[in-house]
Amino acid sequence: MDPGDPLGGAFVTHRPSELAKAVACVQEEAVELADVLAVGQDALYEVALEVAKNREAEEQEEEAMWDFLLGDCFIATAAYGTGTAAEIDVLRTFRDEVLRQSPAGRDYIGFYYSASPPVAAFIARHEGVRTLVRECVVDPIVHLVSWVEPLWQPA
View 1 (cartoon, rainbow, N blue to C red):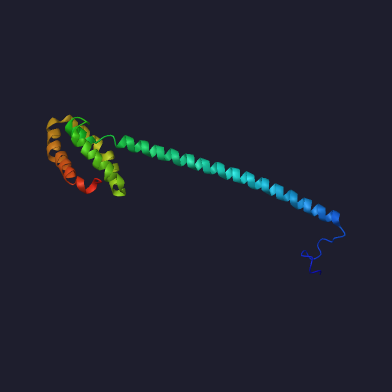
View 2 (cartoon, rainbow, N blue to C red):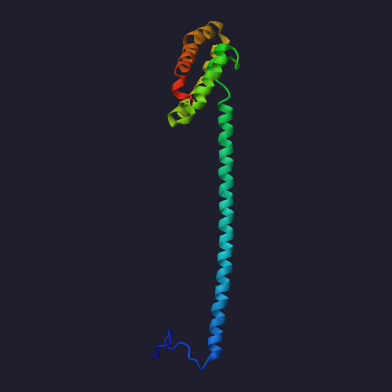
């Protein structure tokens, strides 16, 4: 074996036409492989775009859900007879700034929004219950949240 021949005599220099055919074959295979890789890369890019679109759509759905859910404080609204009472704004701010920031808080919000509408409907239909809930439940919670506000509001 010739030490200058790395192919171990596979291509003999006196057959240049066969060497040229082999080189041409390898070049064709390389072109086909490049085409296959390009198609695969394009397909992967399309999948990545689809995943990004789906993720964005899911994030928009979640944000819309939170906007819908976070718009009402059912029981406080029923107790005050309006959703515009200043006390309700205190509760909304606490919910958004504190409760929504932790998994436990979000779980509580989810429970509250699933359980409270029928309770709020009952409260809204009974004036005595509205007064009782407002004065004995909601107002003390609002006062407590307002009192501890320096602990959770940014300075």
